Image (cartoon, rainbow, N blue to C red):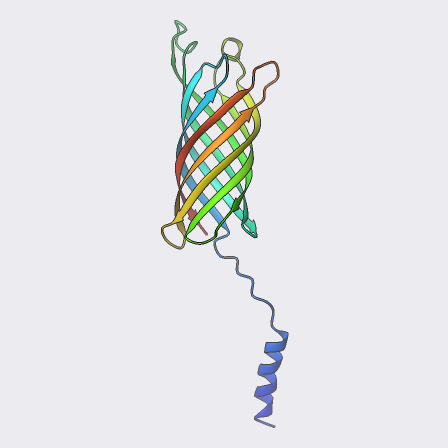
Length: 181
């Protein structure tokens, strides 16, 4: 009886055990530095240098949801200085999207679809629309330098739609560093 009780206890634990559910490294936070070109027929912004804060949440089966919030310096060709000359203006925005990892090893190529928004702090009466939004796409490659730190590169394309304004195309690329936890 003394030998069968431990054996029955081990057998009960094995038969009643719950499946393992690993939730390691399914969230991330990071920073990125990019170059962005905004293009339209009458657009005054030539280019921008965004510093981006980004976060993501791994959903399942190679998908994650990401949010990127840029703070950027944008070069505007006119209407900035007192004599309507060129200068730097501030911009911000956000990108909320879903991306798919083609591989989940140390090298992770991915592609994503997003909703993008952009706001330029400028006088919209003389320089056009200040806020715009629309669909976009990204592709990138992340390399895990350690178990919890990755570095990556990405290129993006966004189409901004604004009432009573022409369509604006935004494209660019950048580098990022991300901590996973």
